[in-house]
Structures are given as C-alpha cells and as structure tokens.
Amino acid sequence: MIGVSTVLMNQVETALINSAPRRWLQRWYETPWLLRLGGSLPPGARVLEIGCGPGYGTQLILDRFGAHHVDAVDLDPAMIDRARRRLGSYGDRVRLHQGDAADLHATLGAGNARYDAVFDFAIIHHIPDWRAALTEIARVLRPGGTFYFDEVTAHALARPTYRLLFDHPEHDRFTAEQFTAACHDVGLQVEARSFTRIRGDYLIGAARRT
Ligand SMILES: C[S@@+](CC[C@H](N)C(=O)[O-])C[C@H]1O[C@@H](n2cnc3c(N)ncnc32)[C@H](O)[C@@H]1O
Image (cartoon, rainbow, N blue to C red; front, side, top):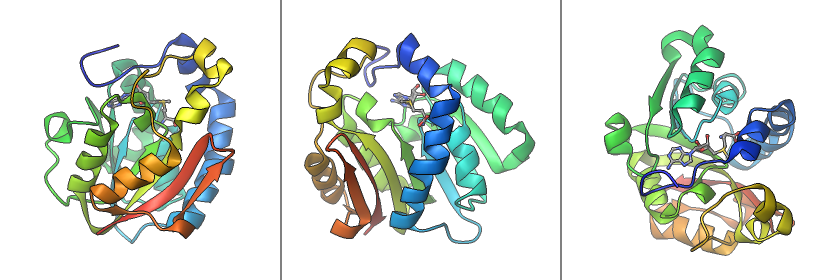
C-alpha cells in the first residue's frame, strides 16, 4: 500500500500490464466495446485518463477515439516513465502527471468541468476510496461529457487466481450494480444500454455527465 489512497500493482500485475497480450486486449476488445457504448469524441476533445500505466491506452484515446489532447495521470513514477517513452511523438498533445486520481486538484490542478471525457482503463478497483475517485471524475467532466470505464468487479477480485497473483484493496470492493449506482450518485448517468457485464467479472461502459 502506498500513501492513503491506493493499492499499487505487484510485480506480476505490472508485468501483465506491460505485456503484448494486455495491449492486444485493450486495442481489439476493450476499445471497440467502449466506442460502441460511448461513441467517439467531439472534435478538439480534451481528455483525462486516470491510471494510464505504460500509456498504451493514451495512444488509443488519441488515435482511435480522436482526442485532441490527453492529460494522463498515474501514481507510479515508473509507469509515467514508460508512458513518456511511448508517447513522445505526440508532442504537446499529451501531458503526463504523476499523482493520485482521487485528488485531481493536487495532481494536476484540474478545475471543474474541464474535460470532454475521462477514461478509466482498469484503475478504479485499485483505489480503496473509489467513490472519491468517481466524485473527482464527475467534478472535472463538463456537463454532457463522457466517462468511459472498463472495470474489474468484486466477483473477479474474489477469484482464487486473482487472490493468488495480484494485490487489491480488501474492503469495499464493488459489484457492477454498486459501481453504476455510485456513478448515478455523483451525476454520472449510466443507462442500461450503455454498459455491459462480462461474466459478472468485468464491467465496460460509458456514463454521461448530467
Ligand atoms: C491495472 S493498471 C491499468 C493500467 C492501464 N490503464 C491499463 O489498462 O493497462 C492500474 C494503473 O493505475 C495506477 N494507479 C493505481 N492507483 C492509482 C491512483 N490512486 N491514482 C493514479 N493512478 C493509480 C497504477 O499505478 C497502474 O498503472
């Protein structure tokens, strides 16, 4: 556990996140789902990605979703270094910030209603106070903006393989229902047709800022 607000990845998960199979899944499975459920971005979109890891998702947000600019945040400095190496060719269309996604003001000085979209590629289940992260996402999204999420539920985290291989918060994990209800509570509207559950383990979808 680092600081007060997250459980960082262990070595096994770090290796997995930096691997070609993870990139394949993100490109060929998660991105098509997110595009289908949330649509692409408006021209000139300013986007925030939380928990960017090695920056492959950032690249997809730019190239496949059509973002003009991405602020990408990760708590782990080693991940920020990797992302910087990957994303150098995008110049000032990308800004990388090391810090906590649950406190975006401290991390990047993000004001209210600043972004057209926020992306969560599998990070919120790492944050013990995940509701605080959702509150921050709602705060920085403009009305009508989109929150794209790809999450791992309590059901998956309880599986023996997950427990054996990875480190995650032990308490207050969320089900798909709890996650979408918490989105609603902070003004992120998830409609029945805008998300999908995969075997009860994963949750992919999009919410609209009211
Ligand atoms: C499971 S990885 C996902 C990485 C990448 N988004 C992907 O889908 O491959 C979770 C990432 O979130 C980062 N992270 C965890 N807690 C965080 C927090 N509170 N604030 C910002 N980043 C965090 C980790 O360092 C890690 O890079």
